[in-house]
Amino acid sequence: MGSWALLWPPLLFTGLLVRPPGTMAQAQYCSVNKDIFEVEENTNVTEPLVDIHVPEGQEVTLGALSTPFAFRIQGNQLFLNVTPDYEEKSLLEAQLLCQSGGTLVTQLRVFVSVLDVNDNAPEFPFKTKEIRVEEDTKVNSTVIPETQLQAEDRDKDDILFYTLQEMTAGASDYFSLVSVNRPALRLDRPLDFYERPNMTFWLLVRDTPGENVEPSHTATATLVLNVVPADLRPPWFLPCTFSDGYVCIQAQYHGAVPTGHILPSPLVLRPGPIYAEDGDRGINQPIIYSIFRGNVNGTFIIHPDSGNLTVARSVPSPMTFLLLVKGQQADLARYSVTQVTVEAVAAAGSPPRFPQRLYRGTVARGAGAGVVVKDAAAPSQPLRIQAQDPEFSDLNSAITYRITNHSHFRMEGEVVLTTTTLAQAGAFYAEEPQPQGFDNQAFLPDHKANWAPVPSPTHDPKPAEAPMPAEPAPPGPASPGGAPEPPAAARAGGSPTAVRSILTKERRPEGGYKAVWFGEDIGTEADVVVLNAPTLDVDGASDSGSGDEGEGAGRGGGPYDAPGGDDSYI
Image (cartoon, rainbow, N blue to C red):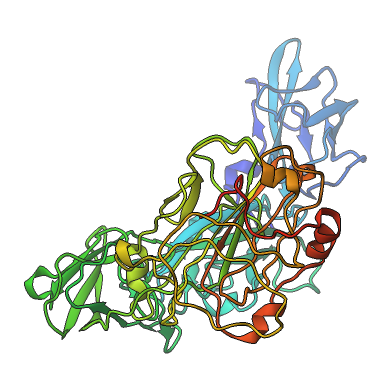
């Protein structure tokens, strides 16, 4: 809003008279009856401002001190030549020069005061302002100074009124303006990066104290406040539970090792592996692990980056280790400590067990040496033979595997590989008879392992008692029976006849399983079947006998169902 009262120096309103010596003053100079006017800005004045009295023989013109282009003289009348704008020029001046024969006789000055009206809306110097606010900023601190948020109003005397409106729910609980006329942004409560990482406000300015005042103009801008996480929290060992949303009650770990053993892989702990993360997840400093108490005789080693705990030396007798493990930020600013309890327990020496009784894999016919046998149930995955220690799962990785009765295959870790080119389709199978009920005798000394071909079944519905395993021997001739037999050509070493593949898991009365036979039509595949020891129960007879078996029996026929001379076994 403009000020409508201006203070004028007395000389500003007085016409300056220049009189030649010896002339009559009353009739020899120009004059006006008014020399100051007030006009509201944006007003188009079409009437003359004033009439100019010009003596005979003189003429009046605009002098060089006149506001350029603001006035014009028509006849002996002074007109306003522009629509005045207070923000551009608040005072207009007309210099009137009366001359006679080129000689200056009279000089007059006429002023137009432009009155300000509220015709301009305020403007912010930005549309969106985005700033970063540290999470640990003190309450009542000024986050954005007034000079950075002030709007500009070309109506120079306007008083501006500011309002802060939240666009993020609850954001007004954290920030406010210092006053309605001072738009400095102030923090009202502590920030929490995890609760509100960013907040958005709408900043409104008005050039009148209320909406009902006319004319009234407004402007808006957007404020985006991004909370920068501060290093306020130490690392937390996971899993942890938040007690109040700010402090996490971290985990303690428990594990066990067998006495007299050095485990080749990291310990399996409860409730999980040792792992900590920066409590200030927005900063997420890397964590460095170390054992700083309780590591008797240097028994354990912890990896500084992964936190994996391994056994460095065996424990001779049962005892309990209480390890204090420190997780420290890489910048060394903060750290936490947790306890790892490790029990050294005497192992009972139970042999490993296979979790399943049958493993079935396939390999393409014609595959060369070093080809991975695929899992028949998941052809894109390798067939893995995995045993488990019944007492210490940590020992699982220490179990080694080998194939003792066939030179066409070998173990590489838990994976079965070929050792030669498999030119013919066929079935390879293995038994691990374990009369003591364990699933894996491969961990016994070599001289105790019992690998032998499986005899043919009979039609007796009652299974005979399973004999004790015999020493390894090459496959012998099969006894006749009504079960499916391999194609005669396959037994004779010639080309096998075209029949579908047959997998029979029917348990033999003597122990073990029937052989698997394949015809020429499967072409590029050869199945590898690894069989665990059969249980000595009668339900094995209905364990698997698939429809393929019956179909193959109908096609092939014959008295044999054990491997012939051209077949291989594991």
